[in-house]
Length: 67
Image (cartoon, rainbow, N blue to C red; front, side):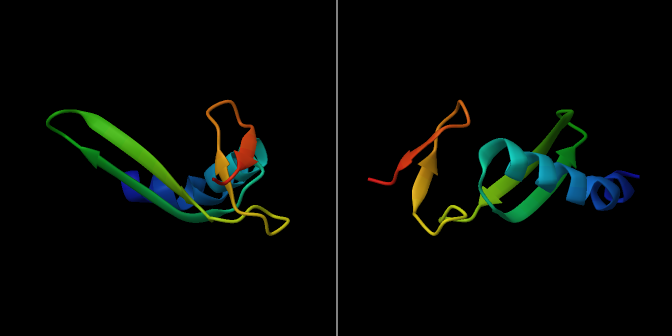
């Protein structure tokens, strides 16, 4: 059941993250445990933004030039 959810929602979830951050998702990972009862969705971001500049994402969706 979880795998079907992941396969069905992958494109929508990745699209939402890319839209919110303005960055490209390089990889999407999803997993869950039964004990303790936890689930994670991990999005690995491409190190360069869409215009080719390397940036780091800020928690508020803003980006700053990579130091």
